[in-house]
Amino acid sequence: MPEPGATIGMEMRGDRAESARLDNFVDGAFAFAITLLVITGGGLPRDVAALEHALRGIPAFAACFVQLALFWHGHVRWRDSVRLTDGTSLRLSLLLVFFALIFVFPLHVVYSSFFAAITGGALSPDFAIHAATVQTMSILFVCYGISYTCMAGTLALLFRHGIRKAALQREHAIAARVSLSVWAFCAAIGLLSTLIALAARPTGNMWLIPLAGFSYALLGFIGPITDRYRKRLQARSPA
Image 1 (cartoon, helix red, strand yellow):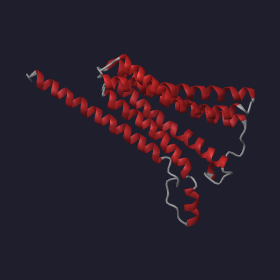
Image 2 (cartoon, one colour):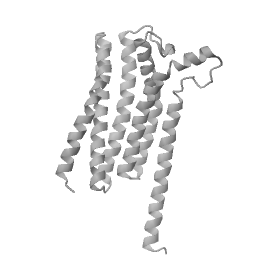
Image 3 (cartoon, rainbow, N blue to C red):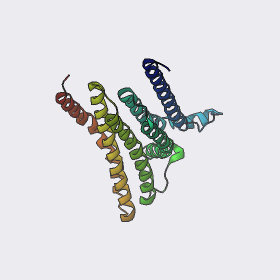
Image 4 (spheres, rainbow, N blue to C red):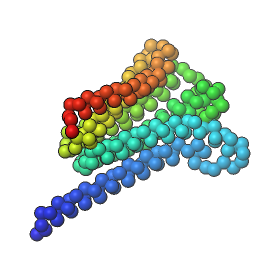
């Protein structure tokens, strides 16, 4: 029979290998999602006109890239602070990947349409919304809001699970609780925007559509809120 120490060592190596495989899969899935946003549509420009046309999609691509990178980094922070490998963590991580591959489509349409609208079609000319009715804009923001809420909510559930199940050191426990509050706040904002967009459709109130978009400006309060929360946690659990 193997000695107890050898058994524990084998289990730890197995956990690390499983964690590495999961992390590599999540990283690869996010990388694949980003490749779906390529400004050239998957083919190289064949002339200067095609190149110029493709370059006008860079601002929308950059905004989508940053948004997906933030969610990916959220999973990286979860792994760094929690270091938990179990069935629930695996399922939630796979669910995050599932939502990321869905989110990439409304994400691209929203940002491309936004840059096309504010520049009169100079940027992202292929995504201009010519009939910006309450119904079409409501569907757009509902699809985006649901996807955003699902991804942020999944990250919040990952941190919540880690706090409940993992034996975290003080520094990691504080980081996990702060991250939980961040992603829960993001999910709440996404849900708020979705509800506003849903309300716009039956009422026909076009002014609710910009309100659904500007709801995400509330994310700017994350920094001050989390700083105060972090200080409270540090004061409550001194080193």
